[in-house]
Length: 102
Image (cartoon, rainbow, N blue to C red):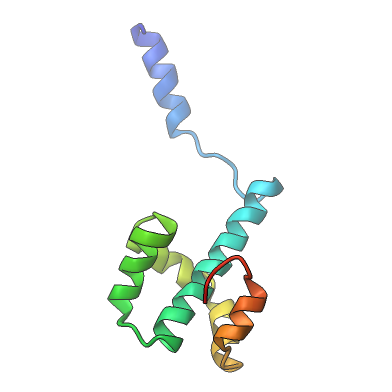
C-alpha cells in the first residue's frame, strides 16, 4: 500500500457512519433497551452492586466497555423508569425478552 492509499484508508476509517436509518438502527435500539432491562434485573431484582452489574454486562453479556454500558443505560432512562415505576418482575421481563434467562 503506497502513501496515498494509506491516507485514503485512514480518512475512510475516520469518516462517521450515519446512524439512525435502516435495520441496524432498529437492532441497536433493541439492544440498548435490552441492556437497560438487564441492568434493572441485576441491580433492582438481584440486588447486585452497581459496579458488578456493569462489569457483568460488559464482560459476559454484551462485550462492550462498562463506560458504554453506563452511557446506554442513561440514554434508556425512560425504559428504566418504566420498569422501576411498574416494579417489573422477572416474569414480566421474560415476556418482554423471551430469549434471555431472567
